[in-house]
Length: 177
Ligand SMILES: [Ca+2]
Ligand SMILES: [Ca+2]
Image (cartoon, helix red, strand yellow):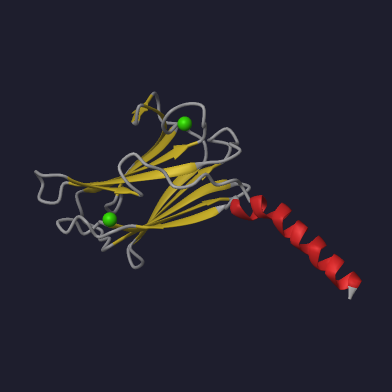
């Protein structure tokens, strides 16, 4: 009985010690409200995963079609000491679109597009954009967090925007797994 109680206390102590590790996630999914009824590409959720090799953002839309007037900016923050994000992948959401990775200053892409490994894949049947950025592009950060902006010229003149999780706000910091 005495031994059992001791082990119980020991395990409880271990549990407390392990908590900070369990709390530093490598994946986060952020649900998003359907707040832009004018746009088919309203963001409904965003999943960010930080692996040992890359950062992968899966942005789910209400209805992603091959023809649209929408674009997506996926901002990545890698430096806590410097305000705002350091990188962005800008892409259209239409079939055959171009995309590019660039440095960011004050939420604007600056300088020449970066040539390191990154990709954007649009999956029409699943209504998902998959954005991949190798950790090497991001200078092997200890943690990252993301903010996503969809802009849609839904009628060719007026633009609606949808931020996730909110305007110029980020998800949680994610350490590589
Ligand atoms: Ca939304
Ligand atoms: Ca920063």
